[in-house]
Amino acid sequence: MIKPWMFEFLQAPVSTGEAATAVFDNGIALWKRLDTLGLEGIFFSEHHFGVSYSPSPNLLIAAIARSTERLRLGTMGVVLPLYQPWRVLEEIGMLDHLTGGRLEIGCASGVPQELIQTGIGPEENRERFNETLEILDAWLAEPVISHHGRYYNFDNLRIVPRPLQQPSPPKWTTVVSIASAVKSASRRSKICTAFESVVRVREIFDAYRAEAGRLGIACGPDHLAIRRNVSVANSEAEANERSEKAKLAVARILADDPRVRRQSSPLLDAPKAGAGFSVHPDEFIAGTPAQVAEQIIAQCRQVGAGHIVAILGRAVDEHRARAVDLFAEQVIPILRRAEVS
Image (cartoon, one colour):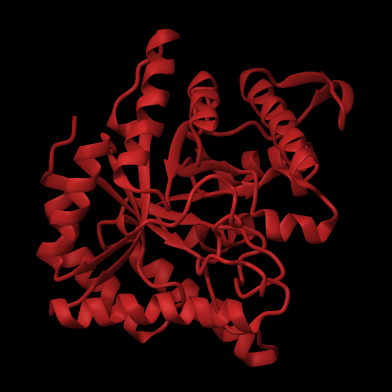
């Protein structure tokens, strides 16, 4: 079975007043409706200083926690270098109770172009990310923790509330490298990757599986996810047109934003050029429901992934609502019948 998730950017033009309110109102209305459509859940992204209205994914989870019953709700992910670790842990505990035990813990190191605006350079970013992960893992294992590192020092810190799910909610980490995949395996964290070709994703996942095997940790398709831009329509031509328009729209938005004008990639969350990879055509899946299902299944089987995290349009609008319905009605049943080993 391939579990289908929706990835939420909550992308919108910079606006104020009622227009900004409408972005959230429309988003919440759509997310509530997803509870009945067969999706596994929603992963909310975190972005700052640009065209995404998702600077705090935990707030968005809290906004729909009590008005949904079935959806898993997670982040992909919380940008740890921007937070005090104890605050992140307290919110994880709160959200797992507010969602009735439906929380997924997703962590990310963040987009370099965004973090650099806060004065956090690449080296400090990595150090803060790794140190906070260490604190997170310690707290999920024990209610009272001590830590002595470069950025945080404390003794016998009791952080409450403890999560409802025991021993902990599922952990996820976004990765774009073999090193990150290997580290995630040792932490018993599931991983999600994007941008890369199927061949490269397979290499990253193989490294994860090898490290899990070396450590004697059970590992299968349920530990691995690929995130893709998905355009689905009743006709192949319409889907391809939508896919091309989406690429151009994102590129245009970024070109008009002086804060990210120097970014060479047309994707909102892609690290800058020189980060070790480029956006591959495999990132974009388009076609009729049957064609989209076929492409997703083929990619998941090639890399051994049991999850597809789908970007079904980056802005909440009428077209996206139709695409979500089509995906739910005709693609999801096929995915849930598919076998991945």
